[in-house]
Image (cartoon, rainbow, N blue to C red):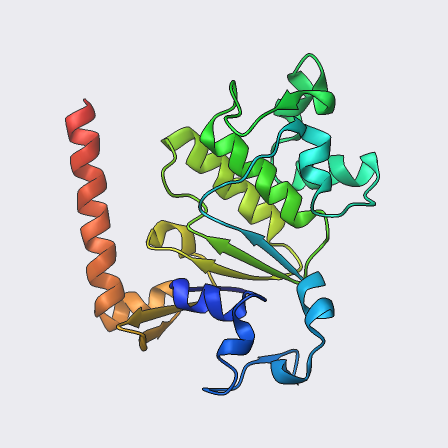
Length: 217
């Protein structure tokens, strides 16, 4: 199931923040109150991909393995395939042994983000949190990252914090927040028929895209 909402939802479900909110309202994961969960076990079930991608100096293998320190090479390559980055890595002269740095020279912003997605997926999380995962990317990179997200979403719950409504068009549930409160919720089609905040934002984003395409011609 894919759910989209703003950064408030992302922060609530992040292990570093969750226990600051449990006195305000209740959160249930698989019918279990989050208050009763073991924090270490809870963290192990979550994969996070943040907007600002962190790449560490080392090989691609080492960067992906940070998501699961005892991961085998086979698991690393499987995660890379799920993140839609395996073919790119395989074409590099040193493959998975290619050294990369924080600046990741020779890699696009989208490819760096796909490395981060592979790092999140290698632990096979039940819950995947994505924070503006397609923002600040060129069109080609955005499509590659979106395909990576589609692949990585299979068999798990995904919470996608985004302002780009194209990211959540196929979500099972879209939650629109305004000033910290739920303004609307439903599927893409239901929210279009409601013709409220979601529909207005979608029209605005479509117009912006059309204008960008016109200026680029």
